Image (cartoon, rainbow, N blue to C red; front, side, top):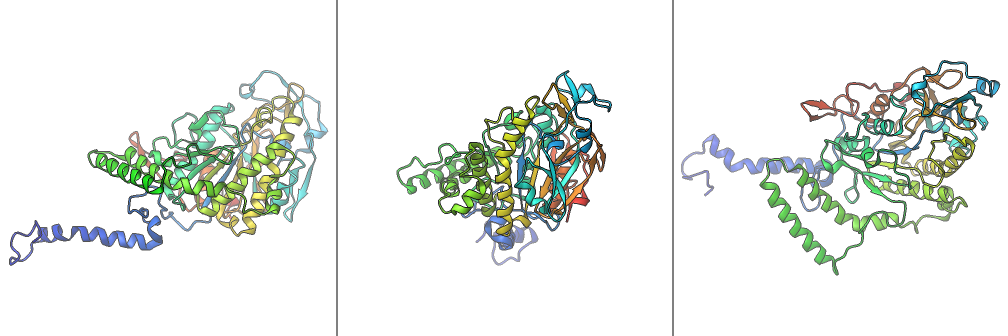
Length: 482
């Protein structure tokens, strides 16, 4: 006899029927969800525990499933990379003829008009101009949409970094990767959904660039170093697998008991999920980082055998990023290798600094795009190349460029992007955006759109209002969507 039914000979009331069959309703719902895309997609792992990183449906049909964000820390110069300005060559060494907002400059030593030390040439069927700094990436322009009219709200690294990553200039807000995994979950159960591959340089602002902010802690980035053992304590300490499983089972039971006694166990649920992923990572990470199965041709293509150490470093994490895409990691960010001076932040010695930075990343990025394309993965992988701002077309001192937030270049490739296109324009000097002005919120809205997410609908209640990555701003850049 069920506890709600006192006499089996008396017909059931509605209350008694619901009491008896309520558990069945949950089983039916769980069965339907699990049939949708396997147990991972339903929010359950193999142990039937709730998985906050389970894949979730987008708002509409997505063009991309994953994101690789190539973060060029320091601010690459648009007029030396993807935005040629012949007028700079004609007026090289002359006083800069446009009005300059002195308050945005890092230092008060504005110099004269400075021509690019590098030549530009048209590439691909699209004929997009790319500087000789990027000879390998130039071969991929037909898969790229170059935005030449990007703007930033801040000209100081920390604020600009936060704004690029989170849509807000102060620390403590959720980053792009956190918003993406919050909305869509992950396609991989053995690795975190949001991973930062640190090439050696942590950007100004530190780990808050990759924070989950007010979102549950589950969606914060996991930072992998550039070595073969990117995660500390990845090797199991227990003598046997069974002993480790027993310890995890005990920890799970204790955590579940504590969670049942709390009104708001979100942080504990995140910790439980982290333990589960960490246990699976002990097998998944060594396999991920084992490149012995990659061909010699692939290793050379990525620059792993290059005579420049930083090309090897960046090539290594680009190859690992491709392997992560194959395993379903949702959002991957790559930071630049160290040892090239002050990142892309060449306030002086522009030629040497930008040459070393470009040499570090050019071959690996081109290899990543080509490799993804050959494997049929580029169509579903959105690749974004961006710094936090650009550089001035006039000199800082004799041979540097200061920060410039008024107009700079970024590019997108794969994942539903209209390849071989250029959107927007800066003035004849490359100082300010004058056509198709784009803000960071627009870039975020476009990235989410390509992932099948309406940026106005993806919200999280915090501080008495519905928060979102794009705040109350942002429009999809339709011209770069294929």
